[in-house]
Length: 419
Ligand code: EPU
Image 1 (cartoon, rainbow, N blue to C red):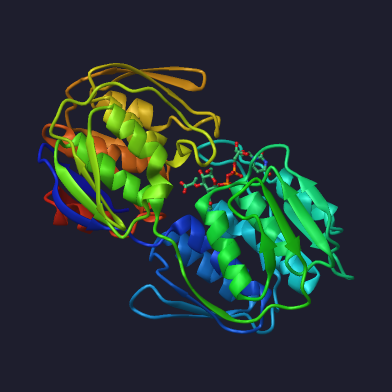
Image 2 (image 1 turned 90 degrees about the horizontal axis):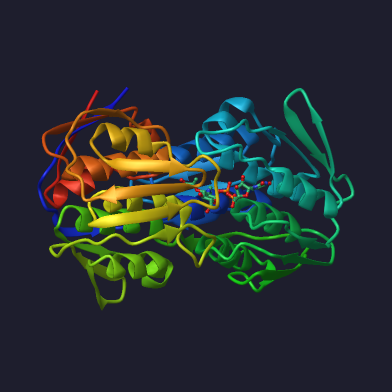
């Protein structure tokens, strides 16, 4: 298993490009199952979760062709196995995103039930209830969910009990081929949902309101091919901005979308980092001043993203004063805290809140990555810690960050991968 070895203490200076969004590319790949025509996607990040999704599409019967850059072409001609097997679902929960498209296109889907994961129980009951509302019959047997709609799906009004990102995406993909109108209320407003809607519209779907809490979909008989460029990864860009701030450096993040990062930018500014937006697609952070404590509460978009909580928490270990970091989306997303503690951070967990007392000097040691964003937080801590930090199990970070050690090295980080 690969490890990262980081020599901390160097301020990062320079420019880092943003890759395509993992969480936008995953549903986009699943959407390719909705048509027999080729769908061409650009700026698909080459990360492990994407490879898992591509393997899943191939297993189902699609042809997946990739070039050396970020272009992936998917042709989902005949779907012989409308199924997501346990082996793939257990490595990536977003595999459940194929359920909606499969049942819409083939009238059936068999998807392994995902188990819990490091950040919480993560049930998919809301996906199931919504598909049932569209007329699918769902049964659970031998650890699999089987969905059937031999006569096709029927549009309906779906009001989600709570906001779910992949739930909204799954149902949107089912509803585009349903008869009549579907209205999704309390829909997720994340940019990844809007990006998926944009792709589906290019394929011939009729969708209005994506990016708001109410999405209206008028079903069509079939969809065609399309070409689409995935949005930049706001979480990756945010991680690099925090890297600039935590190391007291000056980092320019290119190829990102400022509006997608506003909640983070507000917090970084309030904490004393200087953020500028010199041109479209470019954000610059200057972290040479003092970083002050600044509370944060994660919420759905446009609020502060749970996927940036761990990285922000690492920054708060270096801020003057006490900060309260409250996690409202997942029930167990503080796995990085004990590891940061081993590096010298002073953090207490009380329920869904982490109370961070800074600024504490961090010292390098061996720490364990437990999930994707927790690993990113440990990398950030390693960049500022004195001495050597060894991060074990970096396959977690490879799930969602494209060559992070190369990108960080380019701006002066002393980080290397060892096998
Ligand atoms: N929930 C339910 N039932 C459901 C679905 C969700 O109770 O059927 C709960 C979840 O347990 C959670 C909350 O609702 O407490 C929100 O979960 P959501 O469904 O929005 O999460 P997700 O769609 O499974 C996506 C991202 C996550 C990101 C969350 C929240 C993808 C592939 N994954 O997950 O990304 O944290 O939205 O923004 O889009 C990551 O990239 O590291 C990551 C975990």
